[in-house]
Length: 296
Image (cartoon, helix red, strand yellow):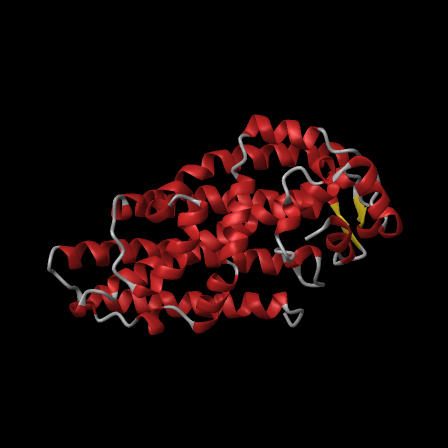
């Protein structure tokens, strides 16, 4: 989303504390849940030939952007870089933002930092849900698994994953920018206030390469509601934390289930555990979705 459009979508005011806390929550989510989930899954899908038709749309997108069927390993390796860039972003937010933020008085530098924070949170969430989708799709290929893909993954999650595939691959490439390159590009952004009426003139004078050096305009929508929708932020972040924790737990169960199926030892009790855990995730995800619509 172009910076003037992005800023027009922001709440009138919010605090720097909200941004710093969001960075801390996202960092904790990655280190505690998302990165460990991929570390667990990577051996299962190393050199793996996907059998499920459900994976075809994703494999096509990843083949063009992230390197084909090795996408689980590619994503796993990206988290170290993502965290380095997120830490640099936090340092710059603390150095450049005042205590109170007016959505319509943000500079190009501050807008880039805020958009980057949103992208990292989105990548973390999408990556976990994608992994659940992948395990469910591949497990269904074993007739004795008892897994029905459309029971394991909700239609809403399927639509969300497919609808945001291009945004994810684009965002992943942005947030995994080499840290030294990231610092150089961010450090070169002019600290000029964004104004709707002069945005075109500023762009023509300074150039998009300096105003939006990471090409975040390629992401068509805002990705974190806490800057755009009035809500109880603490409650939203608590539910987000619980969702991430529950998703890691279900992914651990999926891994064990797939291992048993590959050994020819299906486990009905384990399948029941997975169903229970998935129902819990669905309830939390629904609550988050309602909050994101402003109905929380």
